[in-house]
Amino acid sequence: MNDVRSEPQVKPYSIYTTTERWFIVALTGFAAMFSPLTANIYFPAIPTISAVFHKSTELINLTVTVYMIVQGIAPMFWGTMSDRWGRRPMFIGCMVVLCGACVGLALVPTNAYWLLMVLRCLQAAGSASTVALGAGVIADIAAPAERGSFFGIWNIGPMVGPCVGPVLGGVLADQLGWRSIFWFLVISSGVCGLVMVLLLPETLRALVGDGSVPPPKSYRPLIPVIGRAQQEPDYSSRGNRRGFANPLLLFLYPDVTILLLFNALIYAEFYAVTATISTLFQPTYPFLNETQTGLCFLAIGGGMMVGGIVNGELLDSEYQRVKRKAIRKLEQDPESKVKLEDVTKEANFPIEVARLRLMPVMFAIYVAACIGYGWCLDAGVNIAGPLILQIIIGWTCVSMMNSAQTLIIDLAPSHGSAVTACNNLVRCSFGAAAVSVIDLMLKRLGTGWTYVLLSGLCIVFSPSYYILMHYGPRWRAQRRARRQAAEASTA
Image 1 (cartoon, rainbow, N blue to C red):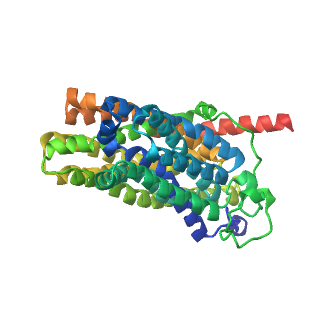
Image 2: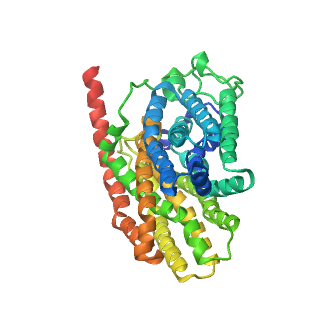
Image 3: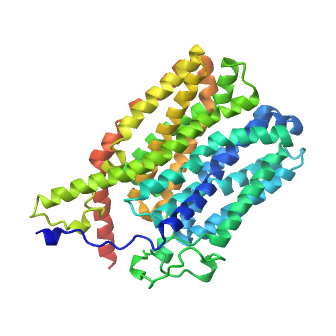
């Protein structure tokens, strides 16, 4: 019995070494940072741009609105194309579009407001999709058992962007002028794109499998130092190359839709916190100058950095805990038809439990911190109070976002970029809605009751976690049965 149930040697999910995979994750995480960074670095310069373009603040704010609209839509196209044509060309294409748009913005004449709008749309089209592409890369190179750690580190990029952006934008606009913001983005995105051209390998499993299958020459990096420990090509690891699929069809997955909607509610409240730091802190703490107000963003950013790393390790630990529990159950049931080596296969493994078991605890802390944050500002307590609560908000928010993002990829691994694009679309829509009404809510309800209301909306939908853990395996089984029936009918 013990010999039969002994754990077999499992073939590595990817040929890349741990160091090589961390380099790929770091590079794609840096690229993913440009999506929120290009949006938020622009905020401190809005009054100056309004003056030099001789347009009202409301008209300049329209450039923020169109940016967020394109930010939500563009990944649906780039992400779907990357699932078909590969990650590397789409990443490089995004960097080229972003860099070109930023050159145009740095040189835009101040009498061409229409051109400012167009270039902001192009900027969003280039930067926004890097989040979806990076998530697809992680699905390519990281097995489910280690995906949490990789997402934890990678998520630092897109989640810290909203906090670092205003600080950088304020310093650049104050010291070097508003055009320096876009020259900074030209240089940074250009460097990122150049490193990708030189070093980033193609990872799409439909093209290269576990990395051992050579891609076409046009897909290879100019300096092929990553993956040099070549081996015999394993064509069995290469999935079928899919045709173009409508990413909106992923909303027909009930578990994906529930997760995306609840994830978006959490993100909306988070955005309502970050978008109002300047407007709430300056009147509440009048001793702060603009630079000091910008530094207040670092509290929530620091919490996100630490939370992303810690939660990534927790996710992998939870995965192993659920795996050990499943193995013990098999060992106690000698009549089970499930083999030990198949315990982590999709049909047998409760991935929802592994990803969501700790989420209710983090959610409770997050909601309590948001409510406390609102009332601290309402009462004008010592500035240390809201800053500490910002750290907790950042920590718990990125933990929940990381867990949700990892589960989304687990539910649709062959559509890694497309499903992340759907996540981005829903999040940006909810975030834009929150930003558009937050000032009105603060004026009508006051700071304390505003965050009570936003937290209350999240609490109303919080049973989503338990629904996913209970019904998620059943929904996955139904999709698997339909997929097998479709394959049998075409055989």
